[in-house]
Length: 237
Image (cartoon, rainbow, N blue to C red; front, side):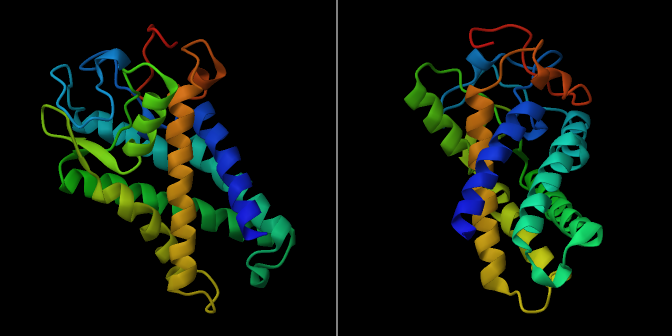
């Protein structure tokens, strides 16, 4: 049952990730930006067209990713799953139980996002996802998968292993388990929850690589507050 729930959650959050254009997964365009075709595939080589985002843009990106419509919608959906399964049972049912589950899921996401962006700044990594400039389903799928645990670093934007992307999902689940979950939960539960969160991140990347359909779509209108928008034109709009 837990596996089925996790799969359902992954599928739905993948769609939500595409609809909200999660700011973490944006191609920076416009002032100081670059089109998707300028971004290299998942090869790790440098990109001479890469422009590192400013601190202000990264801050705007973080605020949208942590407190925008996507984390709110995702927490509402996840809380509904928890309510249906009565997990954890100590929180019971009704509005009070749903409120606790919503607050918990939103808090986990906020801690995870804060950890990822904070560590990325410390390690001088770019926490934003860049759509692949390559052609072909296999290449683009590989790019989305590799990007789940890699980031860009330096002025040339070379690809590196991303400790923040690896640590962040477990930071959120550990905080919940030892912060507000019932006492019977422990490190094993936090680790399992972190694994699900990492899988969801992969789903978000895949959705943003393949599902986005351009500036006139619903995806764009749900993302008006985010400074990092999709290109206004391009071969895969």
